[in-house]
Picture 1 (cartoon, rainbow, N blue to C red):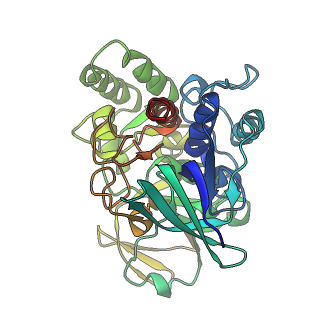
Picture 2: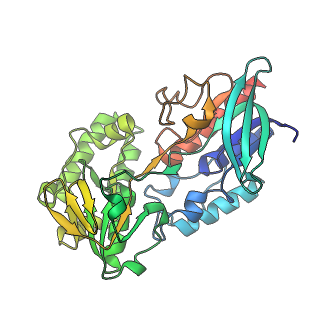
Picture 3: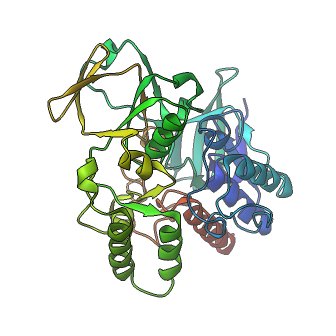
Length: 379
């Protein structure tokens, strides 16, 4: 099969890949998107729960050159955001090559091009591509991750990753453990409780809990004052509104919410109702897991509880380092940028990354515009 040559190849058709494509099209720069799934934005379309809403206000969640409709509420629902992405793809005439799983990308010094091999998912054939510019847009949420707990294979009930969870209908009256206290874990716990499941959530590490309004105010203030001031204000407000969380089994981190996000990519929990359920005892908070024995889960406090199902809201790993060869500058072992923000998006030899700065959709839009502007200057 002949090698396909393009000016720019984007790996990944999630929001960051789509945003990059749209920005390139503004300059009439030809590109190709390689996507391993059979649709764009697969995390939104196939691997997210029903009640999902954007946690940040819509002005922080728009992709470049295309506004979210004024009819959308401030916090956009999954359904409305998917419709927005559909319209985005249609407007910019984005046409990803689906079912292409990239297996290797190597920079070829003699030709000054990236040589890419991708497996065609339907035929199993390996197809070859080359490009002058390569954009890694595979996302922070690339491959579902489940920790290997001792005895996990002995658990007799249902065990799924959060990407397989839709709603709590089938878990009514069942005892369900949610492992992970990020935004997905906390919202899935709320959804389960609303469906009448006996819900517990593992909160292993200290977390910040903020309301949507507090997060909105924090992002607004960041335009005008240092983030350490914003951190102090948000921590104070969180203590004022949510009080002493230790009596519910939750500790606050020593560092502020924006400091944690910038340094470690650890997002604060945006509370949409879970706190109230914890406060009144509908959702039980449990410490870290030490082992699993059949249906019983043993916790770090020495106690054990039986469960009918476990939902792992334990995040994602990135597999970029398995296929991207020879890059020792841009991405680390975990597929995240080594250079710090705001210079994280540009590597060497025409390599870029989009949507990997742990700044959500706002960060993806920032990256996409920078990448397109930079490529334009090099052509």
